[in-house]
Length: 276
Image (cartoon, rainbow, N blue to C red; front, side, top):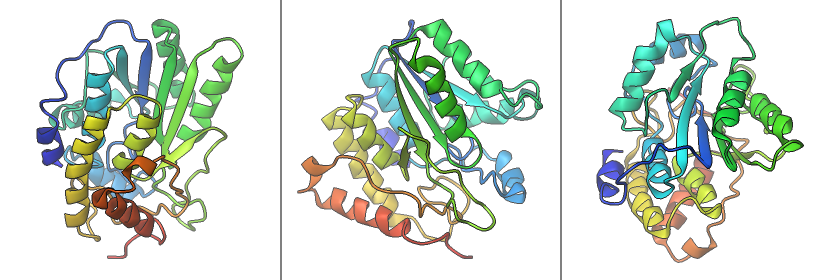
């Protein structure tokens, strides 16, 4: 996916880390990083890697950061720092995710099941944002935790919450069962349809949308179906059968690239994981 970063180099310039009006809270494993957390053997193998990127997520976050100067990004992970800080930091830096000092938050106490709720709450209280974008996955607890956060602030504040969940596990899978979406949450299968949903909310420009599509379409067309490692849009183990396309893309109806990409995403999410 290096072509996306190269293609967007002229667009993605400058970052502002002043007090944020919009904050992006992102999970790491199975959200932006290919981890396969519900398979402990695969998760252990993937933990050591820093090239296992869900392709395009880095470029999307760079677009958001560059085009929204009041946006600040935080990465909140349940992984303990003594085990994963160096690897998570290397992953973010090597893949050119937007980062500032202190933007990676990790769980010191592995028995603290409320870490994410407490950490995200402390970030919101500190930043006092008008909009909170939360990006996670349906593998473990992001759906419930993000819903809990939104409910916590819904009555006492006017913060707008946008929650997007990476649908990498099927809720009816007999082995790796994913979590269903909570009310108001929207699922995404790839960085492309997540970009479209954020475009609907005014966070992504038309120019960046087209540049991203050009590179993403090429990467998707060339990606083999049976790979599990490396920078991938769809690792073979992904089972996104619960995913439904909800992004508004009517303005792209005349784009052959957009039509082909949408069709391939929908086809891939119409069946189970790819067998070896």
